[in-house]
Image (cartoon, rainbow, N blue to C red; front, side, top):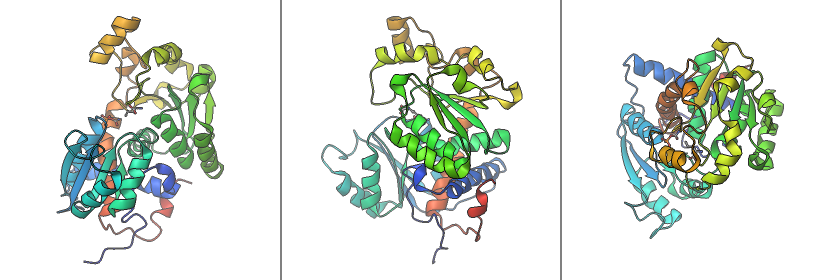
Length: 349
Ligand code: CP
Ligand code: NVA
């Protein structure tokens, strides 16, 4: 059957910046719609009979689970592969792997180190490639995060999100760019040594000129969190890094505490805490115990008090990974009928 022409059909999702703000917004709204369908047990098998490869160089709980459950809900078959169980990387190049996977699978999720690997898979596989996180970007996390904010606040434009932590990591990069596309003021609050790179800030600023968002990078906590609707943080040391000592020293003053939540000056019902997870909010993990023994810390990027407080939205956010990843897979691979003008009008005025 001939598919409907859609702006999304057959496209890869490697970084948010590759989409228009309206397209990004459409995927976020579609995630909310699919959440509603799932809660009401309405079937939505847009990818019936298709096969999906899940290729992981780095570990994952949420992203892996989301792609698996979303594939099943869409009627597709997911296959998980990691770098120890495949030839990928050690004996076979990105190009050759892409050609093989693309000949058998209808879509490929990739999580790993280099953005260029995701790009190579997309270039040579001939099927949509979805970036499940690289050192540079985490686009599927953005779909879930802005979907979560829309679920809570009913709109995005004009909201302020303060990301407090490592301003150079994939999350900071992704939030400042996606937020600027959608009209959300993203403040990166980080010590001078960990400020977001100028390249990324420039991409954000270009989008902000159109959306009216006011992105900011600052080392001043009081300035950065003022007026925030969302206080967001992430691990101090990302996958692939090991510089704990440096990060503990630089980022301890940037831990999210109840005092920081109050510093926003935002009324309680207009303020939430978010975290892409996993989080170090206690010592109930191997790393948590090691850091406690070495540096005497019982909590890292967020206190247990905030993590369990009335502000906590991180588990709704985690669930939304699945709904939003499902939306992204469906629009890029499902031959969906998208009425004329629906994408353009998805963006809030
Ligand atoms: N937030 C996120 O990507 O979680 P996982 O590492 O568990 O996939
Ligand atoms: N910055 C973190 C995000 C994890 C979802 C990492 O890359 O490890």
